[in-house]
View 1 (cartoon, rainbow, N blue to C red):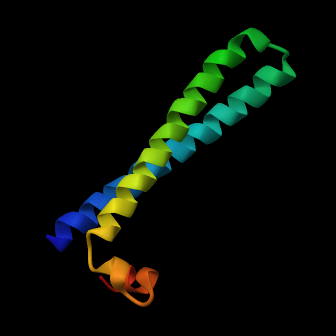
View 2: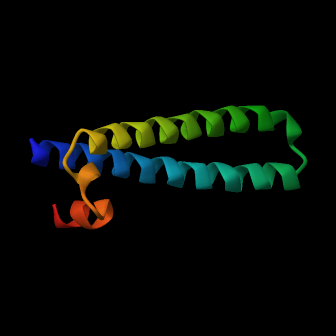
Amino acid sequence: MQTELLNRIAESIEQDIIACETLVQLLHHERKLLADRALDTLDSIIQEKSAWLIKLEQSAKTRQSLLISSDINTAEDPAAAFMAW
């Protein structure tokens, strides 16, 4: 069970890395659009950024609930317990 939990947490973190990398690319694109004054395209960038931020928030909530359901959450130092686990 703990291995499955650890795998789910690791998958969640990997998905967050992808989301963050995508957000960085979107921010670079947005900066270029602003510099070029291509304001008509900004709405789509804003909507896409919002969708990725929602995914990050959902992922954080999922990880939090996974940690609450594990013994890690009751440890004196949860970060150290997670790393030892």
